[in-house]
Every structure is written in C-alpha cells, then in structure tokens.
Length: 160
Ligand SMILES: Nc1ncnc2c1ncn2[C@@H]1O[C@H](COP(=O)(O)OP(=O)(O)OP(=O)(O)O)[C@@H](O)[C@H]1O
Ligand SMILES: [Mg+2]
Image 1 (cartoon, protein in one colour):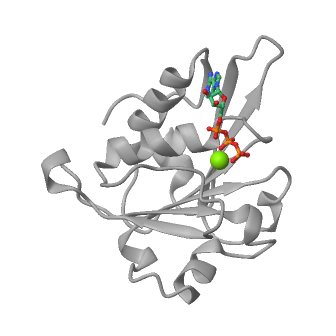
Image 2 (cartoon, rainbow, N blue to C red):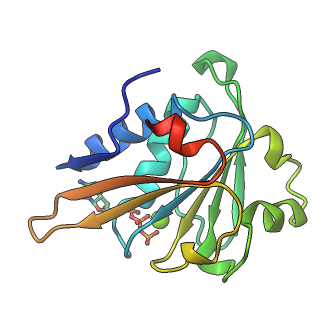
C-alpha cells in the first residue's frame, strides 16, 4: 500500500484526486468513508480519486437527483470492489448510512463494497458504526487541507 499521510495540503483539484487514489489503496470491502466539508470543498473530487484508485467504471459526479449510485469494478482498470457513492445531503441524519443504502435496494451489497458518503458539516457525530472520516477544509487562497480521522473498528491501526 502507498504511504498515507493523515493530513495533507492539496493545492489543486488534481492533487485532491491523487490523494483519493492513494486512499483507495487502503480501502477494503465493507468500508464506510465519510467525506465532510463545506459546499465546493472538493468532496466529489476526492470521491473521483477514490473511484479511480478502486478501478470502478462510470464517471463520478455530484448525484443531484439521486441519493446513491453504484460504480461497478472495471477489471480492465484492475477493479476488485464496487463503490457506492452517496450524497447524504438528501439522506438527512442517520445512524448508519450503509443501512440506509441497503434499504435503497441498489443491487449492491454494502458489505462487499466501499461506500463513500458526501456529508455536510457537523453530521458525522451522529454516526455510530466504524468509519473513516475525511475532513476537507478550504483556505482563503483556495488550497484545501485534508485530514483523516479513523473512528472505531481497526481504523486507528490501519492509519497508524
Ligand atoms: N485543491 C482543490 N481541491 C479540490 N477542488 C478544488 C481545488 N481547487 C479548486 N477546486 C475546485 O473546487 C470545486 C470542488 O467541487 P466538488 O464538487 O468536488 O466539491 P464538493 O465538496 O463535492 O461540493 P458539494 O458540497 O456541492 O457536493 C471544483 O470546481 C474544483 O475544480
Ligand atoms: Mg459533491
């Protein structure tokens, strides 16, 4: 696995995507990744990088009118795991986004997928299960700062 820093400065959208690609190397089936940050922080850009790193098919965009999309692994890109991309802005406050996504009957099992949720500020405290929080903040000069916080499960060891 590529070395993963728990904090990084991301000057450009390309570097935000590259950070997502590196992060994907640490992900496995059943993982929940919660991307937090204000509007336009770069959550979708980072999700695009994760999708590229996981080798999934289909372009990752802001799901404005859908709650979640499944991106199948593309064997030609070395893909092994589906990625479920969720815009939790429309999901509201929930204890476990994976349970909500399961209820959507998406034809994807969250236990066999990596679930990436775009979440607004201040909602992550609601979450009860193990997850990786990726917090993106925006500086005045338009660069981004990303910080990883592992919650529960074996995240603390995996990020060590
Ligand atoms: N360092 C950077 N990292 C990420 N995005 C950047 C950066 N610098 C500029 N940008 C721009 O900021 C925007 C980020 O948009 P993006 O859709 O990824 O944000 P978002 O957090 O998903 O927004 P939303 O809250 O609407 O879902 C893009 O237009 C991107 O080009
Ligand atoms: Mg977005």
